[in-house]
Length: 70
Image (cartoon, rainbow, N blue to C red; front, top):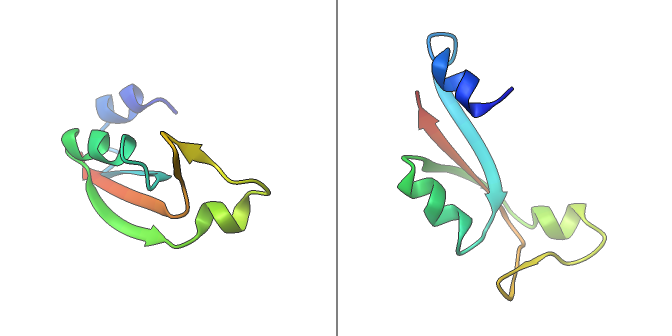
């Protein structure tokens, strides 16, 4: 389902949740879009991928979940 469809049908949904790496780029982007931090899954990328994942020279370790009320 596309985000546009969710927002257009917001009567069916009350919260939009996203998960992203502990990135210095994506977390602030979502926060600027009105999302607030919900919870963290420690070592998600380390435990679930067979290779390190980097963004802008920073190794992603934790999954950050953010929520936004619709």
